[in-house]
Every structure is written in structure tokens, then in C-alpha cells.
Length: 257
Image (tube, rainbow, N blue to C red; front, side, top):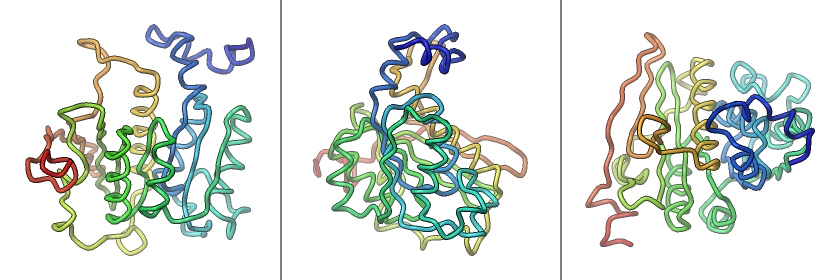
């Protein structure tokens, strides 16, 4: 690390758990973020500001006026621009040291199979079940940790799926592909803007702890792997549910591996 980097990241380096070796791991890390919308916006901002070396962001959409109520990485001046390019511009202004690979495309099964193995971590900031299941399948196959979140209305949830851990469930354990309800979108149902801000920041936080290899010492850092946190923003109450691998999971059950 050079002196300018030590100054930029000094408030992290002052933390007892955050040595220069932790910061070096972040600087060398490669993170794939699927979605540059409500969840992806704050997640990308915090990953970039913390010094993650390379960020790949994939999203097929363009910035729309209706996005600006919650997607804080975009601006009015960039309406009509691809979300990934809008995000890349913002991140370059925030931290020019970070390499941003912007991909205006839908993260389908083929694309994910090619790009997930190149990442150290994936953040699922998508907005539909099909994409979430495709991301989960690719991460499980490549043994890449996945930080997953979703939000709608005043409700949200976040967890970690880490295929490197033998006991970790996967997304399909919680939401079997053949049992999911039809997608409910914020375009038709609405979403409380601070909810995606909170959850996107938490996704970044979990990601930084995984990349920096913080914990899990007793009484210190504890991953969300195996724990699903659910937020009701009407009361700001959290509910925690312990989640386990499903013996019948079509993705990670022993019979299917």
C-alpha cells in the first residue's frame, strides 16, 4: 500500500480488526454485482469506497425517472443512460483506483457460468426469481460466496450462501424453483426507498467481511451464512431465522451434486 491509500482507507485501518493485510485483500479482490438498481446502488458505493479492486456490474436496463427515488448511484442528468455506465461514472468519481467493468446485459445462465468463476464474491441485487436461481446455481457450481438480498414494499431480507462451507444452504433450499410465487415487482407494488439502502449497505458489509477474512472468532464477526434476517420497516423490527440445507434441494442436496 502507498501512503495515499493508507490515508484514503485510514478510518478502516484504525479498526482493531482491519490490518493492512485485510485492506490488501480488498484491493486484490474481484466482485460481481448483479443489478445496478435499488440494492446494487448502495452496495456498489460501499464496495468501491472501501477499495475493492475490481467491480463487475451487470444490468440490462437504462436509468428512468422512477428509479431516482431509491437508486442513489444515478442522477437526473443520466436519465436514459445505461445503468451500468451511470454506476461506473459515479464509482470513478468516488474512487478512481477501483476498476469497474460495466456490462449492459441480462445475467442469464450462460453469462453467469462464464463470469461467476472469475469472481471472489457475488452480490445478488437482482429483482426476479429466475435470475436469483441462475445466480445461485452458478455460485454453487463455482464455490463462490453469494450475498443475497431482496426488498419489496416495507419488507426485506438478506442472507449469505457460501458453498465453501459444508453446512451452508443455497437459495434453492429456501425457495425451491418449483414452488416460487410469481414475481412481485416494485414497479407495481412499490418499495420504501430507505429499505433498499439499508439492505444494500448490509450486502456490502457482509461482502467486505468475507473478502477481508474477518472472523469468525467467538464474540466477534459472525457471517449471515445459515441465518436469514428479515426486516419490517414499518416498525424497524428484525426477525432472524436459522436456515439449513434441504435434503431435497435440487441444487445442493448430495444426490444432485
